[in-house]
Length: 178
Length: 211
Ligand SMILES: [Zn+2]
Image 1 (cartoon, each protein chain N blue to C red):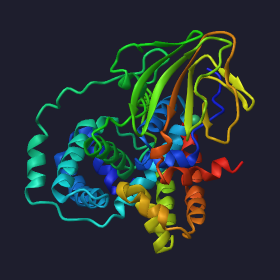
Image 2 (image 1 turned 90 degrees about the vertical axis):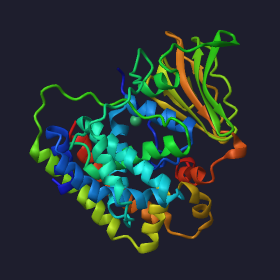
Image 3 (image 1 turned 135 degrees about the vertical axis):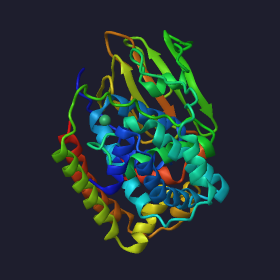
């Protein structure tokens, strides 16, 4: 398991404050950078960071390492909070999946999932800088879509198909967990 | 439950995961994911990508007091938050839009009814109630329209849409959906206004419509 996922499981199962502090030290500056990329002020970004990390503490019971890495779970919380706060609308979010009662954590499944996620990260790192920038903008820059649509001529299709390959593998793995 | 055969396209799911999908479509995606394990897996894959991007984001130092402030808040009781669980045929995100109440149907004639969940300049999302044999209203397709079946089914030239299926319509789709025999068909239908068509979305969807 990734170190962050280990910390998050410790927060979930032991309400471990030291682990939560470690999660904060890793994610808070990244969240701040991530949120500010979509044009949010530093002060408001910090408010959102605090809100997101508090949600991580309070909702840790819902974290399932069979289905998500810590970064993906925290990403999704940040995205929801950012939309709720900045756009002042309630983002529609899917029903939570009911946990199987009494199901034991399966280390091999968690490991297999983690490996798929790591492969996806490697694929992301191997992209050309401008291709990666494109995906970052699509994911982070709510306010720069106009800009993206003006940047014609970028090989978005290539990027998408490469990402898709990684996602397809990931998706198969996720399906296998069901 | 019969198998879902019409899903959320990958590109639209990516836009939802990135938070760039307009609210009416986001509601249909969230409702479909609530019903569909395949699309939930796809969404979680895109969240993984979002998480990977978050990990690789350039960090910006946070203010000195932020961590101690936060640690001091951990023992505070969480403020009560309304939780809207799925109820009957309506998934959680639809119940949230209904604020936990039953739909307030307004008749459109011929037994067809609607209940508007939200309506802004960016588009609208509503519930439609269509008795067996009646046409699904307003398929003029000024822009993009997503229709998710919650009860019953409808059919058109392109096929049959049962519970959980999503139909994607645009200007190019010429069809006449009719509610099938049996229970009245209840759908969640989202459209965007053509004037405020998000420039990003059509490009994301192009591969889809190049059929
Ligand atoms: Zn689906």
